[in-house]
Length: 114
Length: 117
Image (cartoon, rainbow over all chains, first blue to last red; front, top):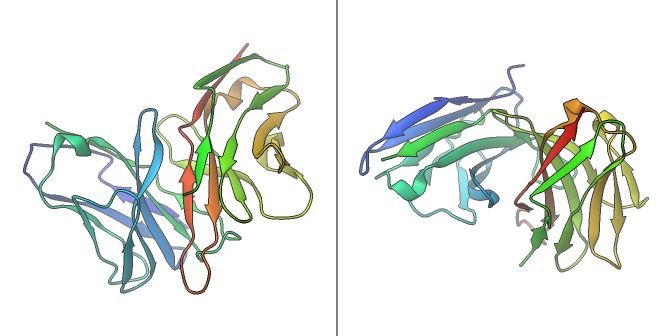
């Protein structure tokens, strides 16, 4: 199993540009989520999905869209990038959404918005 | 709202010495507590969790954590530190929502552990 994969690893955007961060998992996990990691702030939940076709907002959803058309994929879209979105983005997945289920994290995407 | 505090931004310890990384939490209801480790340029890896039962939880790589309900703490410990333990450590708390609601992890800010040879 490849686990949780994320592309690209690095990206530089100009303010106002749009892009999609890709996340895929091959573990047949139902629960997937996106976090952003900023220095001194830990990880903050952006959006999550409990299964294909179902998504919901996390702690910091503004400026981001998600969709979940398949179990495997959970892309994160930035519609109009802003410098405040400069961060490291992590995708995670777990078999279920209960506390008994370990979350598996991807390697991250480092995004810089100028 | 649930929250996690990691009071130390950095912990330095000599190789072979015991290490402790501190975590305190605030949550209504029963807490579910986790420790994750992040090595440079990598995603987070699960170390251990406390759901219920024994207050001392053993996890990966020789780490353990002690749940203390009266002090609302969940400190990470290891009897003898290795240089390879140097990494960023995150404590997280989860609360189970009732019914069909989801659970969410709330992470602390992270503590950088440096083990000095």
